[in-house]
Length: 377
Image (cartoon, rainbow, N blue to C red; front, side, top):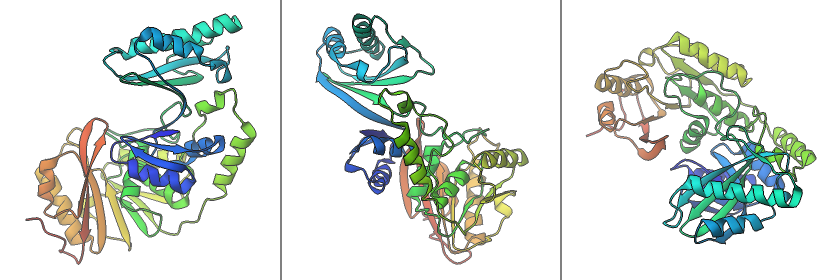
């Protein structure tokens, strides 16, 4: 199987899969390969926090052109997976001089599936672009073709709890990845001082309580497969819920904007986590450390999210951390390389990531006594 993720989160996802019980885990570019049975596929979809989708490869072969691609796809026993009454679509990724257009390659696979069903069953599944029952993933590299079933359907960052967002929010997989990268395990206290719509807070609480990542998700595409085992799926969910733990720390969010505080509170309520998370309207630059030990992670606003003077804004971040948050580890993510220098602290760690197509840097600062950190040169 393959679990896709964002650039930079591959090792974290691999550890998640190993801890879940996956075998033969191999890290690739933006994905992790692993072995597991049907129950593990269900469990991976339900539990993994840093996976975007889970693919189940079903066929791999060579094809030199579109005709051979069609012929080989038509030979495959699609009726083992797809009902003739189902709807389906093809997601194609092509990197080959022999197949220059991913759309045309996808059409040939679609035609092969449709023609096989028509000839053998007298009826064929219909194509549906937006909400299909079955998603077939087509991947072509040079002349190697891999066909997979997408077991997730909607990307796994669509957890099902988000009611509203602010501008330029972190998606849920990105938020969970940042938390894990920063070492958040639910021991201690957590603060997001610029919390926006509350995604980091919610993901932090779900990690602390060991709640399944997809607790609020309504449906996975594997539920439409012909071999779907409903009893096994119910057992997997029940077993994972039995692993929920207690949390005795504090998870707190600040935002200067009262409207965003309300948005965060609505999302937190939708995730059924209001008793574990507190959100306050507060300017971080006027705040003081309330709890210890404390981990801070935040996503400072971009220029388009809030009218800020970048140099002054990042200088205030550094000053607030140094003066008001002694003995604290703080991480934040930014796409503004120039602004980093204005913080006035030298990051202990700097990790390159991508938030969508935007190159960003995830920075760790260790604050010691008040007024003291690792000063930048």
